[in-house]
Length: 297
Length: 289
Image (tube, rainbow over all chains, first blue to last red; front, side, top):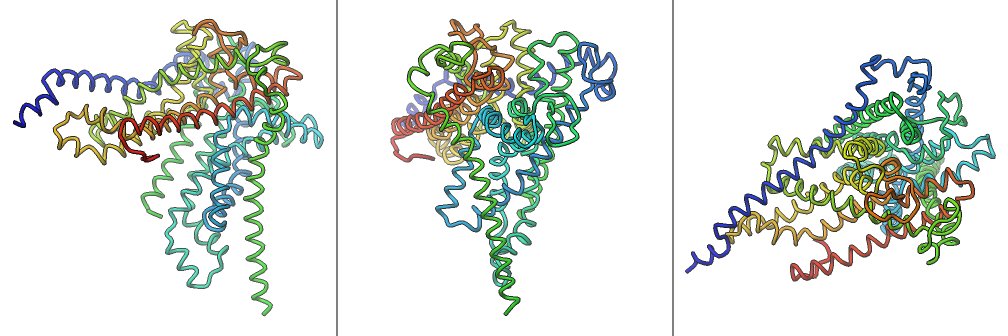
């Protein structure tokens, strides 16, 4: 009596349907996986004509960024992007570490939960909103201090604020992997709470914290809207924090709408460069993070 | 006696420093939000949401921009959801775990997740706007955005299907159900809250994105008539008002507040929907799996 029931659940046509279903799923999955290759292929396709006309080094040795006169030196913009990223990281890391230590070890449960929720809430704020706030709140304040206001400093501060949620969330999970025995052992030896945190817990979680910083840096360097809105967009290697700069990403967003010919191709080269920088950062962050997890510390 | 009090003083100073930095940072994080609420509430009204922009956006409202945004986001979701579902299904049930197809798919998604948004913009401009001849349009912007949200969506779908699979794979097989039936009739309903949460996350990212749309979906602030029309998303509108339109800041704040409220509303609505659907499909009342 059981056989007909089994047959009614999976009659022969369903084998065909199953085959169709799994092939469709395979196609979709492969298409999804192909997008990243398509991106590289299209960027290369647009950039290669220009790269073949003078090698890759020309983008660092040409006389300046005068795209209409076929002079494509991106050094000032690469330097600006790196300054912005390093600056934002220097500001954001100590603050994120402080938030993480307080929420994980020091604050009472209610306060810790409130702080965590606020951090997660700000992680969902669109970057263009940070940019709007930067333009209308931070830039005028810096302008009072040292005109014009739209500057490397404004970019560093707003980007730092934008990456604090990212770094904090990752740092919190790194701190949670530190074995409780370390903290208990330190307490048994009479080590004070803050000494335990700073000398034992933070060093034990340092790989996870480093990985959080690297992923924060990847977000900062790829960020477009904030740096486009608050940095002043002048192509130059800055000599002080108060000078306006133009980041590589901002340059793409600014010039793409009207770029033609070689100029357009040079922006795709900039895109490739961004892709390369970010991939290296993400790979490094993942690698360090994985080592931390494998060590179980 | 003196050394003890010094140690205690040092301890107190460290605690004060940590709390000071942490609470200071949280206050900084709240500053942009409070500014948006403070300035946005003065502008935001039903009229603002339902009228067209006047004088490059200095006056009037954002109705056509909301429609364009909705179009762009829905297209991106419609394009990314089947792809992500395919990826998630193949990663949990299709490919052999640890085999090379699984590794290739996983790695390519990891890389895609790290690609800066402006690079997606370049790609979309090159493929959808030029090669496929869609021009600056809502369709081109939506499709480009779909590529950007794909890794987020695929990861969360795979994660929730994986959890459901571990619990129900063997049970389904024991009942003599085909793998496809177990997947579609058991795992997907069980994983539904996770799937919906993933969709909300992807929607949030799509709504928040600006750089991708700057040169794929266009700048027009008129009411779009078809998907091939150029349309401006709310985020692009905020950018434009804040930087290119002198005197556009008040309406930029109004649009920013509308965007934040839209994000909040979305996650609330989908959570409620998820509860209801899960009750219907599995007969249980648990809020989350």
